[in-house]
Length: 311
Image 1: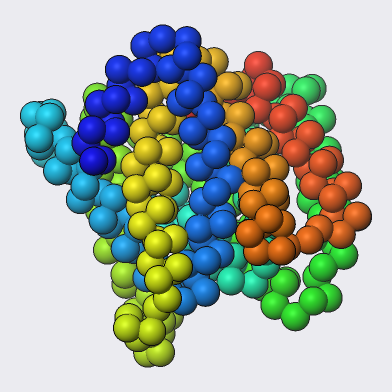
Image 2: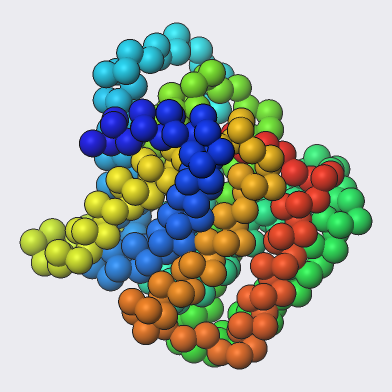
């Protein structure tokens, strides 16, 4: 089924309607993933869940590549090393810490915090590479971080919220570091091959993180609910395979602004799904902060001086 989806997506994105469908898929999966995170981590420890998610997805993609007879790259230390580092930053630290933070906050709230990833990316590029933002990007940075303060301030007194916010923001910082690393890394010609090289090592690292953090001590697979297993299956098939494949296919076919639009559309979808499925609510001041943050992210993403085509 996964291989068929990859082929259908490849064919569909040759037409304007196919492009619109692929962009819509990135929007929906970016938002719905947080609902899946919230349901899954209620029963499966976060690092273990992420290890299973990216490990199984990576193996399925590897199987798809073998069936489609895509040539795997000849071993070269630097591309393999760079891919492993990207997987560590994007998946193990980036998404791993974000998912860990979802334990303590709502799905929609977590998605709003994670939407600051482009702001973190710009800040890291400025500090490490001297890539000073242009006027529009600078306005986006100031607006985005100002909105972030309004977003998190009202709820920090709630037990556990500060820990959740800290984990998610640490995850977005790691994601930003991954984006900065991606500007200089060497990678295989096939984006799907590069994804496999990131997913499989990251799965092993996440498994080690799970063991070291003591997640295995209290985990009993037989006690995991059907809903949690279904959420994990969704994250593997729809979130990792279909959603990421859609993103890979639209990158060379649309502007970077459109390709990255899921950063500020996804949280809106996550808020709606969190309210509809889990009964989550957002305080008025948090909503104002969310709107300001998303406006800042939108300014950042649409800035001509800081937009880079995704990897």
